[in-house]
Figure 1: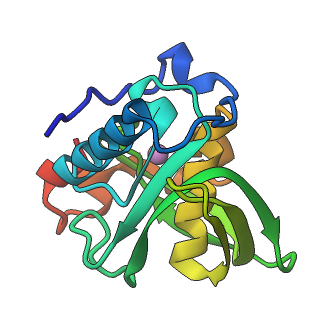
Figure 2: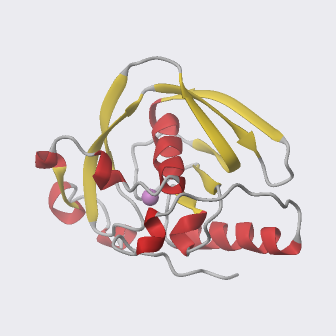
Figure 3: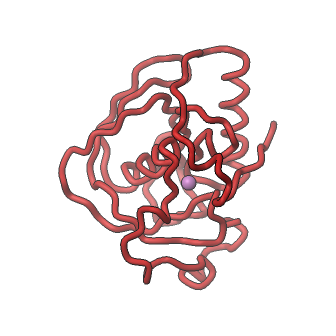
Length: 178
Ligand code: NI
């Protein structure tokens, strides 16, 4: 088990556009994906993008049954999504609070598409195509944004809804947000 260091906002490596993955089922890719799950689980994250550990590839993971950082969130299937394409299925957007392992201790309300289709491949290059909504759609948009060099604070419209988790959500365990 290898928990990798998660880069924090301000690191220029989080601002790069990620490169497509071209190799599958190699020892290096298997190790990278295993390390990403170890890192995400160690931090109780809902998702993690490869650029967050300094790997500039179009690879994100997400999913959980229950998540301490988002106790009210419905479960999201554990997913490895590579070379993703997102297509909104309507113009409807909604605000919702997000945090990020690269932005520890803070939460902000971010507008996201309510319904979208995501396509890509998994770690074995098998196609993935899902139509999702709500929190699942939000998580995917947040993670795929990391592949575009975008962190959620860059998407905030109403900065009155951006602040410290311990202040805005005092019932959450602060150890789950650093
Ligand atoms: Ni994030």
